[in-house]
Picture 1 (cartoon, rainbow, N blue to C red):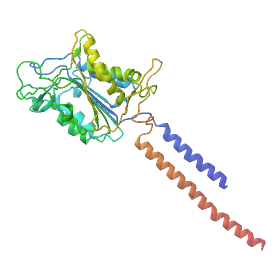
Picture 2 (picture 1 turned 180 degrees about the vertical axis):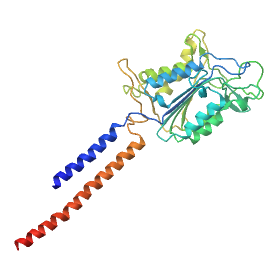
Picture 3 (picture 1 turned 45 degrees about the horizontal axis):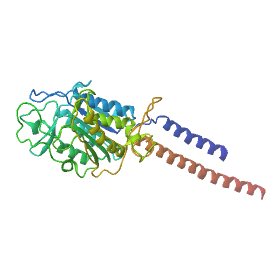
Picture 4 (picture 1 turned 90 degrees about the vertical axis):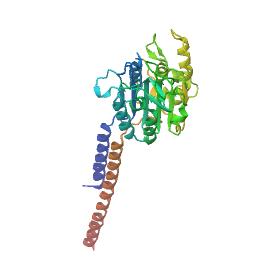
Amino acid sequence: MSLGKRLWGRSCGVLLGGLLAFSGVRPVQCEDTAILIGVDLTDSTAVRDLQYAGADAKLLQTTLVRGGFPESGIVCMTDQPKDGSLTPRLEHVRRELQARLAAMSESDRLIIFFGGHATAVDQEWVFVPADFDRESPVATGFRFSELREWLQGCRAKHQLLLLDCCRSPLEGEGEIAGANGADQPLFDVFAGLPTTVIAGCRPGQKCYEALDRQHGYLTLAVAEALQGRANRATEKDPGDDVVDTVELVSYVPHRVRELALSGAEPREQEAAVDDFDAPGSFALTRVVTDSGSADVVATDAGFRLLTTPVKLLLLASAIFGLWWLVRGFRRRIPVVRQTSGRERGKVG
């Protein structure tokens, strides 16, 4: 076989291998994670039930999926899930957060949402899960100091935490021993983390539900922002059709106050925001037009089309193909020299 035919055959083989590898690639980000927790009902009759915390979690789930966030990476925990293991009981909340945060890599995006009651006991800010007991608030509440530890150990550099829960004494029957009004600032709880934190209210305030809109005011503002209003409202990056954390932070606080004051029952509610040590903005959703659906949104620039195993496969294919070509050249050269020598001997 001639040298040209050998090269042509080997090149076609390498090209075919690459095409086969690319054929299995889908534009997904399997490790991007959103954990959305909404608690309306608790086992305790001494805790006032909410109406729309579960609906808030589901609204954010729908908004994220429509905006291109991978649906496979979203965990929605409400009082009425399809899967009973995802009811927002304390053990389930801990299990999902601890396991999923530990499995993330640096380039992944993490979004966590808490919707429901919260209070502070003995300097611990706690979220009220479905099996909360007012008589043992620290033991049965989810402590945000636990979340801080897991966020600190999480490798994901792109973290967003949304807290649609009160920072005032918990209403209901009976006092909670050690309650201090949940007045500690966010800085005391989440300082030093690469996390953008948006709380629905300031220390000592409450997060309200809009009875006419059937959602919490923070959730409404966040959903509006992710659907594209934040992208249209800012002049920093117009026309890119991607909502990032900088745009979200710019939009939400004033919108929460506006919604609360203009509701059927006007309320005083101001969102609190802190970027702490966040390394920079990252994309959250792509703005969807009526004519089509959103692509999967990548973390920084462009879309991440290749998963790590596929990248390794393609790299190995390229190295093998290069070795194959060089090996072909090295085999061909000595044959040419031997033939030339024999022909010269015959002539002589």
